[in-house]
Image 1 (cartoon, rainbow, N blue to C red):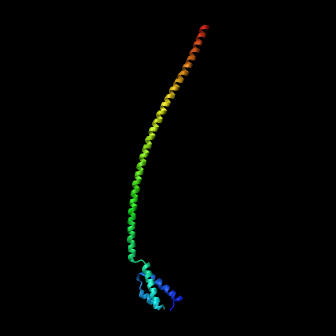
Image 2 (cartoon, helix red, strand yellow):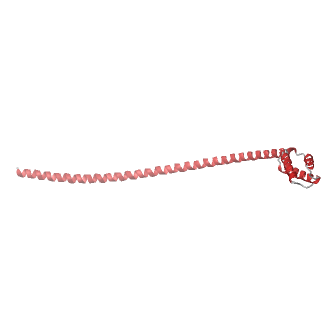
Image 3 (tube, rainbow, N blue to C red):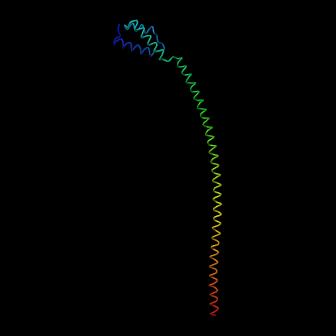
Length: 164
C-alpha cells in the first residue's frame, strides 16, 4: 500500500510520540504500528530503521550527557586555573608597574627639589645684589641731599653772618 495523506498524518503523530519517548524506543512495536496503519512490511522496516538511526545519532544518551558533563567540568577547571594564572601574572605586572612608577615619581620629586633649591638660591643671590644696588643708590641720594642741605645751611649761616 502506498503512503497517503491520512497515513502520513498518523505516521507524524507516531513519530512525535516516539521521539518524546526516545530513550525507550521499541523498534518492533513501532514497526507493528506502522503495519497496522497499512504500511507495507518493507516501508515499516525502512522507517523504523531510519528513525532508530536518527534517534541513536541525534538524541543524547545518559552516557553522552555524563561525558559532556565531565568534559565541561574539566574545561571549567582548566579555565579556572588559566584565569587564576592570568590574575597572578596581572598582579605581578601591576606590582612591577607600580614600583617603577613609584621610583620614577621619587626621582622626579628629587629633581624638582634640587631645581627648586637652585632657583631659590639664584633668587636669593639676585635679591641680595638688588638690595646692595638699592642701598648704594640710597646712600648716593642721601649723600647728595645731605651735601645739598649742608651747602644750603652754610649758605644760610654765611648770609646770617653777613647780615649780622
